[in-house]
Length: 355
Image (tube, rainbow, N blue to C red; front, side, top):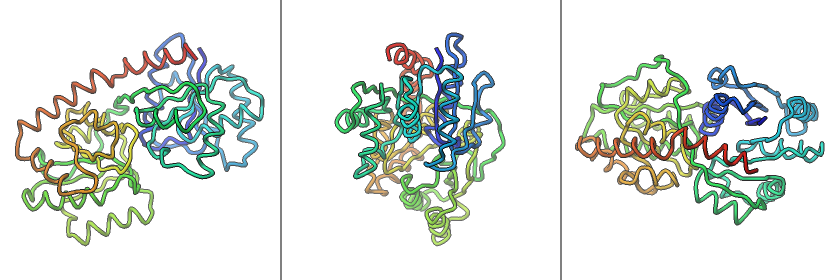
């Protein structure tokens, strides 16, 4: 079977990591010829792509880049692609190519983010129009699946939970702070990740445990949001307790140096970082806005409107090793059993075979 996965960029984000994980895993099966097309921007994840994967960068300049659509169409025809698997916003390019060139390729849209639920106006109308051309929609949680059934026009909507697999075994990053007393947050610096809530909660933690440190790992977009986080840390005199590392590839190494994993997002699909925390056997604290992540971490969910609640849970984990071990073991077992690569790939191959 000849399949192409299409994604807009290869920066280290949840959808991008999963796309690379999928093509790497598919390339292990002899009955699949798998390609990865990146439309707009390459990034650090390019180095993690298996050499068995047929990789192509299309360098899309803008929405009106006619040459891009011609290149995409020609590659699809040349490689005799049977199924196009489009991740997040790349669906629009794939729909346009199928529409403009009368392509009859089967098209799957993989919806990774809860942000689509809040779409309205013309953006929702465009997605709804495109959904007529989707043969199947894969959603990463039940909430997104319910939404796509109600709002879009695709008959086949399927829930397929993410899986995590560490792409890199490097040991480049050395975390600051005292070993055994580190809290880590792996999340790009975007407003939806709600870092200020985390900083406020951690400030309370420090009053009780001043030797603990917080480590923020994720892409710096160089915008006002990132500047506001830097300013907040400075204004609170937390420069010696909160450390920022930017975009890193050696996530496994970073998590192995950490003791508690946290995520304070305002909205999520099924965050890869939560699954990675579980693989690393970290106890985890999240906000209830992380949607389906709540199904994974049942005893450590805080209100997204109350950072005091979040800090209370962190304090309990710091002060009660028995609770910490129980939560980390339960999370690791749950992810190993229900969010494994093996289970995911069997389900995905079943989707491909039935499309």
